[in-house]
Amino acid sequence: MDQKKEKQKGNYFSQTFGPGLITGASDDDPSGIGTYSSAGAKFGFALLWMVAWLLPMMMAVQEACARIGIVTNKGLAGVLLKHYKKKIVLAAVMLLVVANVINIGADLGAMAVSLRMLLGGNFYVLAIGFAIFTVLSEIFIGYHNYVKILKWLTLSVFAYVIAGIIIHPDWLLIWNNAFIPSINFNKEYVFAIIAVFGTTISPYLFFWQASEEVEENKMNGIDCKNKKSVQKRVFNMRLDVSIGMILSNMVAFFIILTTAQVLFQNGITNIESAEQAALALRPLAGDWAYLLFAIGIIGTGLLAIPILAGSGAYALSEIFKWKEGLEIKFSKAKGFYSIITLSVFFGLLLNFFHVNPIRALYWAAFINGIISLPLLVIIMVVGNDKKIMGKETHPLWVKIFGWLAVVFMAAAIIAAIFLYLF
Image (tube, rainbow, N blue to C red; front, side, top):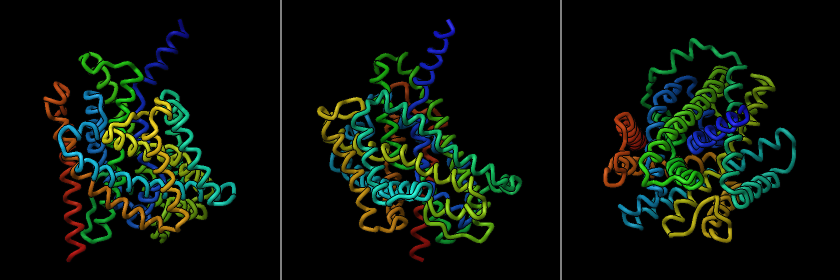
């Protein structure tokens, strides 16, 4: 009887927590860690308020994407193709793939540097090793097993929570900056806001979330025409997405907190990467903070790179009507797995051509900003269309915070353009 109860608990966990938890944790990839570290070092606690403000927006957007995937049993690209011309959808997805490749390159480089800091070794050999491991894992491990590995990798993000606690931060000062916006109308501050927004609410998360909900439907034998099955999936998805997004923003909060407390307050304001943040922390916060930051970079990279590569592969496969899915064997989905392989390969190449990683990430953030605004509008419109979603249209709170995300991002971009021109 006890074994039966344990099995039921295990099944509940596996059926409830999946795409949302994994997506949320993957949002804190090495390049994201670099962005948050840079914001904390440069502006101290002045951007901490964004974490609290972006959380309900992020939850609303990812729930909208997940709901679309569950109800339609199609990825986001597949849904878009029914309402927009193929050329428009392809152009948006190609921009997504370019931004993802840049992020993959930055993540592979950060992981290689972090492992070299901890154990030594040749940077290029380590980067190649991580790239090969990622590709082979996605190709040869079926989704039902691969998703378990990704779930365990989500634990790596807690390294940043622990690092933030062991430095004994000034909690009163943090509390005073955690919710009330501290706005500075200068170019660097506004660009930092856009960078944090683009890192937190990123297009690749939209595509991955919807596609993985489809994978979950297939794995659990969900009939999308069965209203009760769909309602149960949506109920479980809401908890999954909520936990995932809370985890993502909690980690972002502690990264900004740690770098603001240790680096900004000691006059170190120019941090350009996650590994540089780890090195800067060592003499000021001790070996444990340094070690946790470095280990976190490797763990989050192993989690995020497959998702970055996979999100583009799902989207392109739907556009070209290729078979897609991590549960399908390579021989039956060559196009899908080829996109994953090429995305990782070209990302790896960026490290050999000595492309400035920060400049590359700025371009990636810029591209993500271009894509995210129209995509957010489309997601909000499609997800509220009764012809597509039936009774599972956006609940009121998703409508409010989803459209608020659109307004926030549009205002930030307009402000950035104005400050750049004038």
